[in-house]
Image (cartoon, rainbow, N blue to C red; front, side):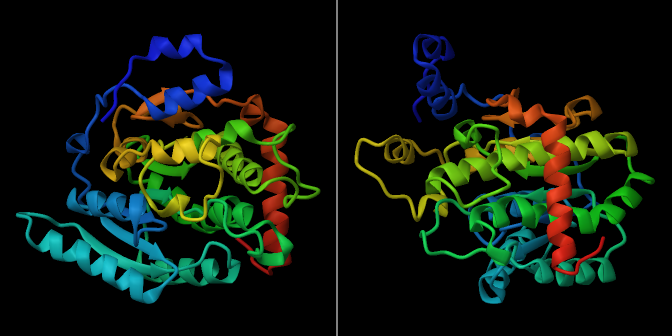
Length: 335
């Protein structure tokens, strides 16, 4: 693993410096072994059949949590959950468990069905890890209600899922230690390449595939900030994280010349074991407190600052929240 010291980045042009800091972070100082006992806690991890989602679900369950692992495919989800539970069976004194929850983030009705299923079985939710996402799908990919598929999957879907689960999250805060009920959105350094103004609500499909991906990742940050503004005082900690440039299937649709920034970044990948550090830190660490709600964490498990000022704009946060609620109404879904 390449490890280069940070000060070198100060000599680079701003965009290159950002890429440098993301792809060559210092050695981790926090490990998953520091996760506290999660016995009795309930978590939901989206996109848990593969990559960062699978590994996050596996580790949370190994520390005692009951983890609802979501997947679009019944077959793939069942295989992932079985694999986690087979591993848990080999551990001594493990009370953790993985349970499949089938949903599709770009299908708002499936989110409603999944939440109804979850709340019919559980009365608490301690951790919601909005991990699932897509990156630069084929240009002919269609999103729901004419919405750009990346924004629908990466922003609107997690918003709706969280919004429907908020009553359970808030109920959980009443009998939980202060600051332990958390919602974590997986964003990306890519948010720094979003369009001017942050989010083009008038035409979310405008611009290149990568620009639209960047727009959706800014949306994750803006939403995490707005959720913090509204619910931190009620006991829910909200955070956004960048997992780093990780060797998962996210780059499956990436295309570009050999010397394009996207292609170069795609070659500088870290293993999944590194990628889960930041999101699991935000989900579980006692070091994360109410004062951190709304914060952006970046590799590896470090407090950082958003690269774009739009992420901190309360007006944009309100506009995104209202826009997402309007899409819920159009789909006939009420929270």
